[in-house]
Amino acid sequence: MRLTGIPLILLAGGLAAGALTVTVRTWSRGGLRRRVVMRTVGLVFAELLVVTTAGLIVNRYQAFYPSWRDLTGGGTEAVVVVAPSDRPRGERPPGEGIVVPVGYAERPHVTFPVIVVLCRPADVEAVRAAARVVPDVVTVAFTPREATEVTRLIGRLPRLARVTGHARALVADRPHRELARRLGEADLDVTTVVTATGGWDAALAEAADRLPAPLVAPLRP
Image (cartoon, rainbow, N blue to C red):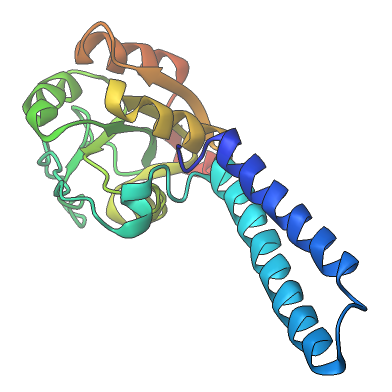
């Protein structure tokens, strides 16, 4: 049963409703001590189930923990990032893992849209090669262990490179497709989600075509 699946939410909700029903029906049964114990246990159990149901619903739409492995911290895959392709002159260089477009250093007053790539470690070199030839886009690729790592990375990007805060695309391989979809639904600034079914070159080109053009300084949000 998937952590973000409807069956688990229905099960938790059904148990919560059942616990409330049993508590109400047994509210006045037995002696005073038994009533106090049964009421306390029933209310606590029902409240826990209601909170669990609400948490499962929020997690389904926000993708904080897309799998049981993410919830238990059992992920073993290390985060892998691509190396910078360019080093600007006269300013702080982009953070490690950022692939900047050709001419980035010569345009210090321009901010660029972003492509965030979710991929397996084995695909990093292919993403690196594809990202180097994508014009006017900053690219970052890594293997997320959980959904919160993606949101933290997106939040840090404006401090790592000259990127716009409202124009980004998600590109994912098949194993990360569902995570990318949920993140795209939860983030209004994600303009498109692309699954790399025809190779990284085609996926990055498609994502770049859907992003707006870079912004000069006076137009920055």
